[in-house]
Every structure is written in structure tokens, then in C-alpha cells.
Length: 233
Image 1 (cartoon, rainbow, N blue to C red):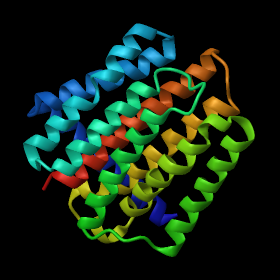
Image 2: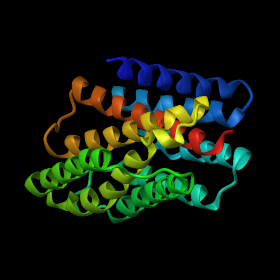
Image 3: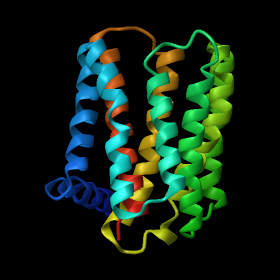
Image 4: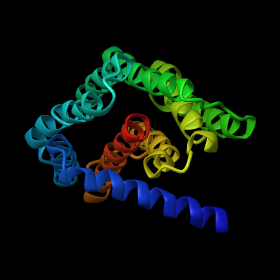
């Protein structure tokens, strides 16, 4: 219980640090405004606002990378994330190839940078994510075959990000680093909800849209925590 409380407090501190960066960095304000608008748009069914805000959310986050650590790997990964965001704007009737590769590229970049910073998997952390990955692939095979490839391929990289980001060894006491594990887990949860919405929890009621909005908020916060943990001193 003490460990859970401690980890939660660390996550709150990291989130606060990421949010207060908006006082000095206009690109952080732009990211938060676009991300929040995309979440509210999903809740209220504002299709055009959702399309616009989802398209312009990632570029300001790239501004954070350029300001603090202009890594070509991270910039390429965020470009992939943008492709993934755009692909998710339409329901996949066939295998969403571009979205699949976009999300995979984003999380491959995150995983590469995490590994470069010293993150390593453990059997316990990898086992938990492997179970989630198997469940996701199985769900896609059962309910929507067009999502088998994305769940298997992109899902593998999402799980890798979550596994590596949760390595306590790289959370070295700096506040922004303490948010890495939370960021990775939020991104994994967001992709899991997206899969559930396409398979088991279909519909367009207010409750369904609230789930979409929550997943989008988790994605926005998760990306911010990962990028800040990897780029800020």
C-alpha cells in the first residue's frame, strides 16, 4: 500500500511539473489546449473539432523535443504518432495499415530512447504486458479480424514502451523521470480502450463517448509524461 501511495504521489508531482511548464513554454500551452479540445470533442460528438484538434496535438509536443533534446528518433516517433492519431479518426473497416505503422513507429522511438537511457525489462513487468498483448490479439481475432495485425504489431511496441518506462532504475529522483512509468501505463491503457471500443464496447451513447474522451485524455497526458521524462533535465 505504501508503494502504491508513493508511486501515485510521484505521478502527481510529475504531472504538475509538466503542466507548469506551460508558464514558460508556449508550445506546451498549445499542446494542452489541442489535447483538451480533442477530449471534449469526443465527449460531445463534435466531429470537425475532433478532427482538427487531433491533427494539431502532436506538433506542439515536437516543439518540446526541439527545445530540450532535438532527437531525430523522438521527432520521427512523434510524426508516427500523428499518423496514428489521424488514422484513428475513422472506424477501420479494413486493416488500418498507416495507423498501425504510425503507432508502432511512435512506440519504437519511445522504447529506443528508454533503452538508451538505461531502461531494461524485468520478467514480472514483461509478463504482465505480454498477458495484455495476448488478450488484445485474441480479442481482435474473436471480434474484428481487421484489427489482428495492429493489435499484434503495434500492440507489441506499445507494451514495450510500458515495460521499459516502468523500470524504476531510470526514475532517478528527478521529478520528470518519475512520470515515465505512469506515462507508459496511460498509453497502454488508452490503446486498450481503443481496442475495446472497436470490439466489445461499441455504440455512441454519452457513456461510450465518455470512454473515448477518457482514453484521449490518458493518451495526451501519457505522451506528455513520456516526452518530458526523456527530454527534460
